[in-house]
Structures are given as C-alpha cells and as structure tokens.
Image 1 (cartoon, helix red, strand yellow):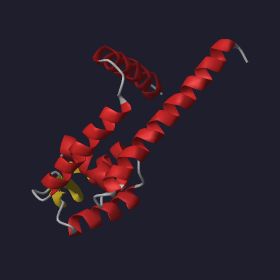
Image 2 (image 1 turned 135 degrees about the horizontal axis):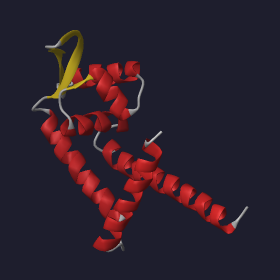
Image 3 (image 1 turned 120 degrees about the vertical axis):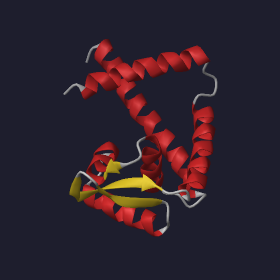
Length: 145
C-alpha cells in the first residue's frame, strides 16, 4: 500500500468514526429527553421540508417506507405530525408538523448546538468553513453516481 492510499484509508476511517461519534453524542442527549434518532430525524427533516410525500420523506431519510410508516404512526399518535391527502394524487399522503412539534424541535435545536460546540471545540471559524467546504465536495463526488 502506498503512503497516499494509506492516508486516504486513514482519512476514510476518521470521517466514518467522527460521523458515528457525532450521531452517538447527539443520540445520547436526545434520549435523555425521550427522543430517539428515528423520531428526531423525521421531525428535523420535516422542519426543513414540510409537506413531503411519505415516499419522498423515506428517500430523504434513507429508510424503508414500512419503517417510516410505523414511525409516522407513532408521531401522529403523539400529535407531532399529521398526514394530509395529496391534492394531486389521492393514492398518497403528505406529512406536516403540528404546532405540538415546536417544543421538541426547539429542544433538538439546542441539543444540536451543544453537540456541535463539543465537536468543533478548538477549531477556528475559518477551519470549520474549510471543513464544511471539503466535506461538501466529497459529498458531491459520491452523489454523482
């Protein structure tokens, strides 16, 4: 193995481990408030793109539609989301947040700020922007399949 490929392999493992630790740290904080990863991912995604079809939401979350259906059933029972018929396609539903989701999203936002502060401790603003740009380029490279 060459030095370049060894460095690339090490970087790949570092990226994977950093992402795993970021998720784990956030999950631990969210669990302390009764929020699971699946729940916060759905709520967070809908806060950014409300009114998605269930199939679109499943794609965004990279989960099986049946898994999302169960999650939405639970969130709907708790009054955090609602499904509305799609006016253009009566075979599907669009998913919306309810007003009751607001406090959960506020809490999640605070937990995200805490987690990012821990993750980026010791990095300058310029380093964070540089890292964001580099990771964006990697994501674009991998998304061009």
